[in-house]
Length: 242
Ligand code: F6R
Image (tube, rainbow, N blue to C red; front, side, top):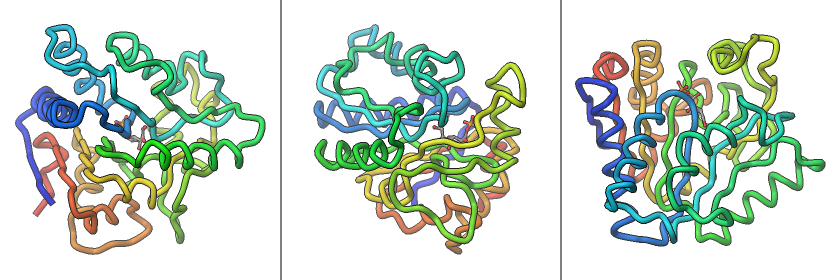
């Protein structure tokens, strides 16, 4: 496991963007696994800047997002589809047909999950997976529990996640209680994983996930067994990593 503890958020964003850029320079047809939430916003900004400067070309890149809220149509202002459009896809040249985000209003959710997995497989698997981490240790929306789901599935969000994510909605009661999420095994199959964590509310989860113990109560802890994992944190999130 490679661990970079940076001075501040901007340095985390820059390092993550440099890794994504290197990946695409070395393999223009890269398949990227992408995350949403507050943490990667700076990374997307940096990537957009690099693209505008002509430093990265996304024209052959394929992307798969980790998750989408169940029941939110694409154009709902708090959907992850809108997040990705506004923060990234509208500003770069990933071809529309190469962009994949789970459909939160698919009629047959099970089919949607199976189809998503199949598309990842047909694309050749994820080359580089970008992850954030929930304060409760979730990755994607794989929440703590007795068992972890392995492939893309419909998941019930924990009270903690609903509360944490209510900042993206006008009202707490608007936050969907379920989401479609890529599963743990799918994440673990990525050739390289980069996890970003910022802020002191992530410190405990980062401590747990680097402790040497793997357990389903901290889903991110399984990443310790991945052969190519890089953690990039700010000082606050990395404060308890030993
Ligand atoms: C988002 C995702 C989640 C977030 C996590 C952290 O696609 O998969 O696991 O990465 O909830 O969110 P922020 O960055 O908002 O703290």
